Amino acid sequence: MPGCGHRPSSPATNGMPMRWSGLRQHWQQQIALSDSQIGLALLALLVGLASAGLITLFRLAIEWPLVAWLPMQHAEHYEALQPWLRAALVCIGGAVLLAGFYALPTERRHVGVAHVLQRMEQHQGYLPLSNMLVQFVAAVVALISGHSAGREGPAIHLGAGVASQMGQRAGLAHHRLRILAGCGVASAISASFNTPMAGVIFAMEVVLLEYSIRGFIPIILASVAGAIVSEAVFGAETAFLVPELDIHSLKEIPVILLLGILAGIVASSFILLVRQLQQYQHWPLWLRWGGLTLVTALISFWLPELLGIGYDTVNAALLGELALATLALLLLGKLLLAAWAAGVGFPAGLIGPVMFIGALLGAMLAQVAIHWFPDYPISAGFYAILGMAAVMAASLRAPLAALVALLELTANPNIIMPGMLAIVIACLVVSEVFHLPSVFKLQPAASAEPSAVQQLLRNTWVAPLMQRSFIAVDRHISITTADYLLGEQVQWLLLSDEHTLLPAADLAHWLTQQDERPERIDLLAIPAEREQTAWLPLRANLQDALDQMQSAQLQWLAITRREQEPHCLGLLSREQVEHFYRYQPGRKEP
Image 1 (tube, helix red, strand yellow):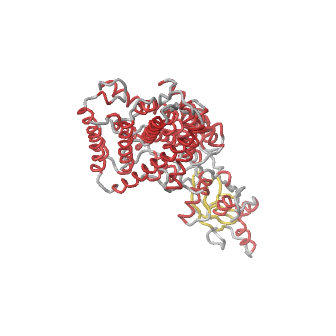
Image 2 (image 1 turned 135 degrees about the vertical axis):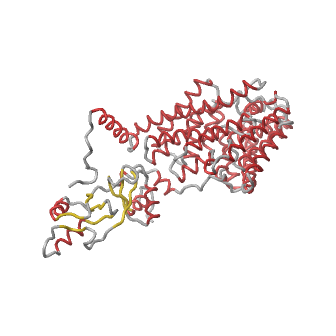
Image 3 (image 1 turned 120 degrees about the vertical axis):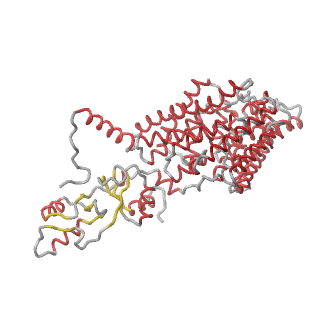
């Protein structure tokens, strides 16, 4: 009697097709559809290299045209252009983006970190290739034309996207696909800033929303691969020119506390401004983006330092080369433009602008402190880098990622204590005083944070919970077959064509009630407690299973290797899933 998982396959005409088929099946078992750490680590390493390679192309696509076509000393020196040329460049870029996005269907317009978080939350880390390509082209156009935005948000989308595509091609199980997308994010952050540790923490703190041993190993490998590729192409320098920094005395603690409070207020102002501007999402695209483009073009006549990514201006603030009035104007201008871009869904990043704002805030406080205490050796760069980390942590709700980035950017362990103080105060101001979420959660594509139970179910594969005490049978069977089935002592009989489960004990009970044993038995005609079922692919996690059970009002699912394949590998009940999350070690009984 053929049971589930024992169907004969047709012989190959020669050994080669069978050999390749065997290799592919081995790949599926060892990497795609298993809990093997080695297989996932190897795949994560490949993802790290691919993600970093794409980020390298992305950075070069922005820098090469600016240096080659425009009279600039470096890729961000928009100040060297004539004012009319700066404004014209911004307007041309805005017009190209508007024309391109009007030609796209609505579902292809979703890009950025919020899109990644939404796909991780609702689609198990499946990121469409088309949206990733739109993100690449749109961000390149926006940044080349001088729009005041960052490249890190698009880089995160690109890193997660290439990882997701590789995982989808490999047929990766859902709980591992989410980890792989986190690997792409870590590699992207590492390649953007040359900060591999911060890449790991950001991926787990912001994207995966959890720290787990299972996720650390592949994400670390991917982040290291990203740093290696970045150093091979761009050198070992970090994204910013950080001078020698240190706290000279504990007398600076009150100033650091004040910086934390101000950083929290500025971060809250940014988040509130984004929320306010989101009220105009119903306005037509040409008005939302066109207005941003025209305002950016006008501001560029007086404050060209706001154009582009702005890392050259951040470096000037770190070195104390900007006057107090200039710092204040640039901070207000960047606050307006960055919040406007985030609020109307402009296809560029907000992480870079948030760091820009924080650096200028810290440099401003240092200027004031120098005025108050002219004889004390205040370092503008010290407070600029602290402000950068504090505003980033408070705006993105990523305190540990910001602290690790601070340590890697400065390579100075003495900055950890003041950095922790400024970051914690800033985060408390945003969360406890203003009661605001991460700015990513405000964006249109974002969704609510998953509960602890949802996180647990999404990270658990269906395979370990499958029941295998069943045999697949036809609806009509002979009495001899019935005796064989009952002799196997299985719990369930699966009628694949009818999507029905029949308890084997009910068949046995019915046979004992018959005066004459029939030659043929219709398993749908005998009295029994049947259960309807549906197919669930093996790559699914427990959250997928529970969602399908709830939507179809089912108590059982048949696990198959692929979608809609009647070749069942095991059974999963709703009772098993609920028992799993209710009685986990460390959880109280409900």
